[in-house]
Image (tube, rainbow over all chains, first blue to last red; front, side, top):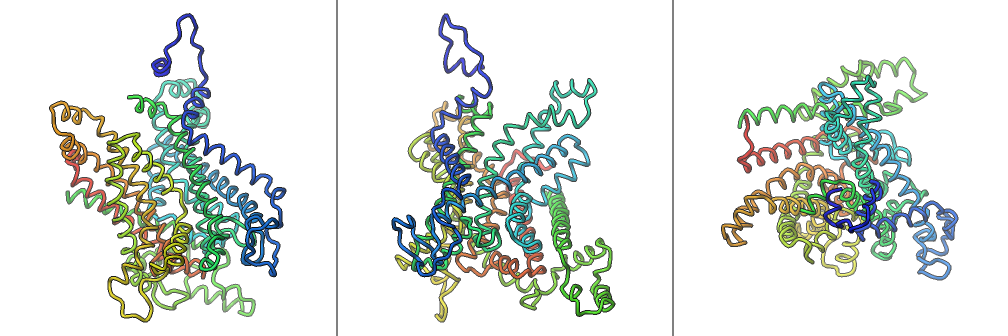
Length: 301
Length: 315
């Protein structure tokens, strides 16, 4: 690529080797040390969540009412909560619920958003008008009020929380995908595919949607951050994942009642939520920079 | 201008109808239905008669039309829990939420714009680096956790600020008392818009600084202060106005959490209470009200945009 030649001029006598897009992407991403650190952290916390049951020293729901608010000790590394439950075990098992809800909700909103955005951009005219006005309408309702309405109607619980977050977070995705589709449609390879008689579905799925891949990856990463934050907020309000299933959000809601006497209990789950959301935001931002050739050109200028 | 305004108002009204249809469909698909119809002690014939009287047997379009025709004049029915008109409940809470959200937005604007500009002008400096890291924290920290931590610090440990409510109970309280109660919730609510506005102000300023007219101004020997103040700043601030359209719905969503932590008697807390008690009329009314607030503020933003930027023609 031209700008790579600008940075590292080919050494005389060697033939410059072609680099795959993935290599180019990785070499750009790697330059952002903060993002690499965030990525390592996220991989580690997902690994912990994957083996949570095996890693947690105690049953996170096991009550020990004789041992409430125990200070950190060799038995309970982070102490115990208001019901004598081991805080470390609850944090470990809670990570699984929080991260799973975040990831699954993101998948729901990416699916819905891609579908609506792709159809609107591809078919244009009335389809576009109807779908985009619907998107505008959804953007007009502050998400949290909509989420509260849906949870009030259908009840809270793990599945409903995932669906609610998914169905209230797709609007930005659909706008991004629509823009990508509109950008791709007039290009020659799409015209060629149409000219040789490919069906609408084939043109859309094989030729147009893959062009939006980079935007979808960025939106998905930022979407996980949004979903983790929203899940924790809903669970904190008592409308999300219900106890005894521990999540970082409902642990905080328990801890707030004892904040005057045992403030440290409120610290741990909050720090974990913040670090995860921060990690996804930093990685998402770095991905946007690394995947977008226009952005990097602007930076060189 | 008046023609543009008319079109925008009509678009806003159309949006509200879409919103109302979404809300109505969600509540209409509630599993179960009114409890009396599922009560085994009620004779099925009587239950049918009640359903007919309540209009529950009408086609969904008729039911929707009936609800909307009342909603447009502000009649959202009566709260199941409080037994008072929903509009009455909402009207009492609106000023409190506007005070909280308005103060938060003011804090965000006052800090974000200068910070964003300094970051852009001194790009890759320590200030820029700190502001960028701070902005990442601002969009990542959970409101409710920040609120709890501030209560721990300022109410529990230092005892400087009250942790809940709008005024001290039992005291003849003046505006000073209200201000003390307002500080923490407003600061917590301002973190997200502050971070977002700062990043927009920075990137907008960075872009403007690379424009030809800025280079021209520098080349003809203007003092850096004048180049920034006269040529760059005005153009850089215009895109920041449009971001308000994204920020305001987020601000109202954030108010739900903030009002709950600090027991601030506003719309958000009303919504949480209504969601927990399944008070459908209240939460439907609230969702419509916040949508109206968003549409009105978007309208103001759009008009401000046109007024500020002479390049936009209204033809």
